[in-house]
Image 1 (cartoon, rainbow, N blue to C red):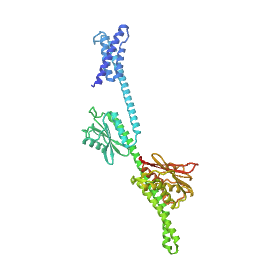
Image 2: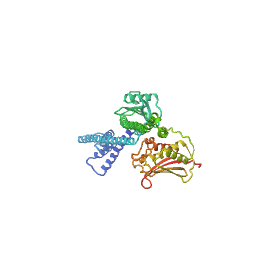
Image 3: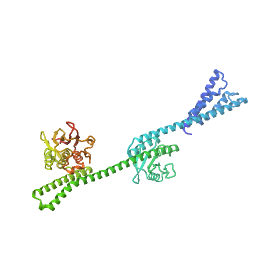
Image 4: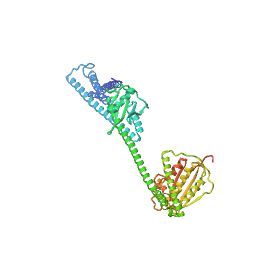
Length: 503
């Protein structure tokens, strides 16, 4: 008998004693036909408060007290009259039946309350886990909640590429002894409970059960002896099994989410690869066909062509080759940016001179737009990679010419601020469509306008602005696109280069 049970019998004795005192007082003040009803109150109190056995004890004690103090002859357990014996037996039977029924009602109420608490605990457990994302976060949350529910140290081991690895524990734990680890592995492979309180590796200080889903076993959850040093009882095991089932379901969802993300990433990589191949093959075909045609003409008809015609063919070959060179450099730059391998060879760069070189090169290649450079003052030097900066400027300026009609005015100017130099490329063309503007710096994003002036096939891949963004951000700067501007049309691309603090 534990301490709690002992207290229940003490309280039952006190209840009967109180009933006895109340009966003596009532008998002294007034005559009642049956004082035994007062003792039934003590029996009901014991039944409702402590259960069946304390109530039966109170019934027997009330029977003896009633007989001793209120049945003639008084203060003995003898019974003189037969009807008194019958009344006393009826009282005992009624008291026992009443106590049994009241005790059962109490026990059922206790079971119902425990079931409600278990359901609430399970709901809270599932609700808390459902808000977590990622396998590690779910495992950590589950370990903490199971420990809180069972009041025992909890550990979760998950299958990581065929190896059962410790993923979460509460309180924090970073290792298991050999017997416990063997028990965990056996629970995982056999899909049966092992360890503490079982017939399999019962010497382990941990009790393990598998985490199973309809697809597979994903790991095990274990609980330790705890402060009591005893194994889990049947009720605790049932609760652990329920919590483990919910944990496995949430972990399986997290695994599936990770697999979906991986599949989406793979599909996106494949889509980009196919798009790149299609774009490159399309944009390589035109300049290569031009170079091949010009070379064939020179080889087959060189004797029939005058010097001027030969020079034109060579210039055309040179122009197309330069366009191919721009495309190849863009592709290589995009590859380095995606791989995080863009190396910067920093030196002091004059942005104004870089812009003038880029504009001169664009004019030599026959840019169909009107390029205007407007600097109100001499720009400060910046510490940057000159080649990459010119490539970024070339891509932005060529992009303006690529997606605007011939004769469009393109102005390059700058604003000097304390922390940055804002290089702006502004055109008065039709502008960027609203659905494309938020994605204009993404790879392979291109406008579908038919009035574009494609002076360089290499820019048709949709990589120009993406590369410019990558280059500027590698220097610690940022880019911005605005459209429309001014009169409701046009586009402005702003490249923000950070300034050195010493300037």
